[in-house]
Length: 372
Length: 134
Image (cartoon, rainbow over all chains, first blue to last red):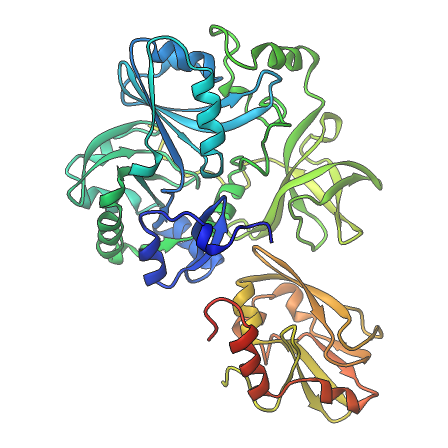
């Protein structure tokens, strides 16, 4: 097993709450996290039909303050930070010089000279090293990951539930925007973002108040059919949306254009890490693309399985599972551009046998996010 | 329904066998289905396949994991539960009933001695079992 011993795993502020509620715990990116409570499929459906609460406190948060914060973040990230207003959130990437991806992230503009960056749990140390090594000018960076709790509330009933516990009008928060308020009495950044394709919020809290807010959400949400949701359903929910998972679908060997993330790379903005390499890829055209596929034969594609075309290896599956809401075996993988069109037939090598798959339009499941 | 019915024999890999005359019905235990979580796919051999005791005869996949299935007894596969193709969730819902997997025509009755009784299996789960036990 690649995961370290349970004793060596880090714990979020909600660890005891998960254990108390009977979650099945697993090692994930160095953290002891709930993989499921009642079952992945049931939890997935709860989020699609009602509302679920996720502990994502293992994710990392870095703050950047100072008059040069915007300029420094422009150099570090691929999206255009100058377009980010106070109260707005931006999806973005950190790239290496060669265009490979350090991490994907969300960037919050908290005040004119104050930003917060949320990064993947398994990458916190790597990202912190990269960011601080390349930071320049009058900007102070702080790693606040350990003090920050993060709860995602996702699903069609999320707005009603968070609305009842918040002292602000959460209906006024637009998609990829945030507001500050108290939720169950705890000061919080209430962000209309998520990783499920459903409407919902991510609540940034002091780690010390995370458990109180978690318990309040689960108590107050009973009439809404709320349930705590583990990482298993978080993965199937994001897969149905074709949201990239770092370490599976994107990493240091993939560039944003082949991953379908060109929309967060703004080549017209001032210089940033990875730009020359990404420009070269753009000029030449990417040779491969991350596509979504559905199995034609009955088989489950898994991360690492080979993708074939008429028996010849052409790529690899990066994510694959049963999609509970689409009720199909689905997956993502890199294939040559010539094989990437919707309708293209491929094979997935499952236990030595080629099983037919078809490239389909993504997301697999139509998103229900509330875009104003 | 008993968690580990007394009329079944059990493997260390968490399969069960129910002797039905000269044949043995085979599935996975409550413990196995619970540890796997939602079963979404079961790959079974064709009727006529010969299986050997403790060799793999198929694969069960949950949302998160792929696991081999081991034959509790040697013999010829004479029936396969084809309803699992459309309804793999029966393995979770009814592991000793609708979730059965194959029926083996068994030639060697002595192989049963290598399998555990329900009491032995429960003891085995407590000592070698996974997180939490039952």
